[in-house]
Length: 293
Image 1 (cartoon, rainbow, N blue to C red):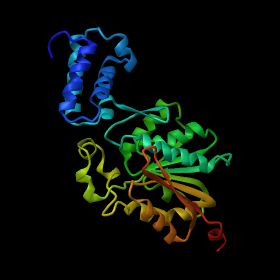
Image 2 (cartoon, rainbow, N blue to C red):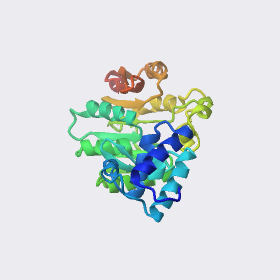
Image 3 (cartoon, helix red, strand yellow):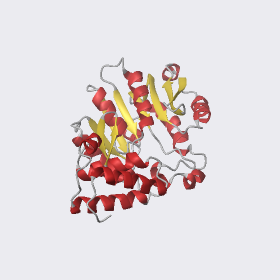
Image 4 (cartoon, rainbow, N blue to C red):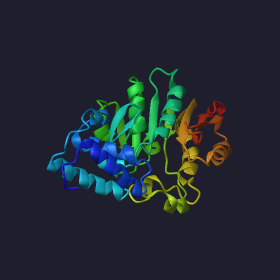
C-alpha cells in the first residue's frame, strides 16, 4: 500500500481486504473509514474519486484499517455514531447506540406527548443517546439521566455539549431510582439495561464481545437480573397513570411481561417490535388503583 493511491482505488482494495477479514459490510466500512481520515462526507469521496492520498493521509488510513481488520467497532475508530439525527461521540466507555433503540424513543415520546412538562428519568444512559433525543424533542421536559459508570457519564456530558443540549439533562452517578424519593411522581422512566444472558456473551460478534463494556451487556443468568429488580422498584417512583419504556432482548418479551404482571403494580403492558420485526421494547403503566391503596 505504498504507491500513490487514489480514493476510488483505495475503496476498491479495502473492500476486498475487509471482506476477507469477515467484516459484514466491507464497502460501507471502507468508505466511512476513508471519509473519516479525509474529513469528507461519503458522497464527496465519489465526487473526488481520482484524488490521490498524501503520505500522511495514507498512514492514518492504514492505522484505522488495521484496527477495523482486528474487529474493533467502526464507531470506536471514527469516534462517532448518528442517533435520532444527533451526532454522538462514541468510546469504549459505553455501548454504541443502535438504530433499533430509536423505537424506544418513539414509544417514550408517545407516552408523554400529552404532558406539558414531563419529569423523565433515563436509566443506564451510556452515551446519553435516549436522554438527548428526548431533550431535543421535549424542550420543556425535566430530564435526569443516570449510569453506574463515571466514564459513561463523562461521555454523556460531552455529548450534551456537542449537541447544544448542556443543561437540558441532569446527570447522576449510580442507580437513578435512588435519587428520587418514593412517590416522586415521575412521568416516565426509560431504560436500556444490560440484558444479554451471561452464557451468551461468548457468542457475540468480536466487535461487541471484545470491545464494548461487559457491564452494559451482562444481564446475568437469563439476562433479566436488572429488569427483575427494576420493575419492582420503579412503581414507587412513578406518578399513577405514568409509565415505563424498557428495551429488551428479542426473545425476552414474554418473560418481561410476566415479571411486570407479577408485581401487581402495572397495567396496559404491551410490546413493540423494531423495524427488523424483533421484539424490542416493553411498555407498561402504573395503576391508579395502586395509588389509592
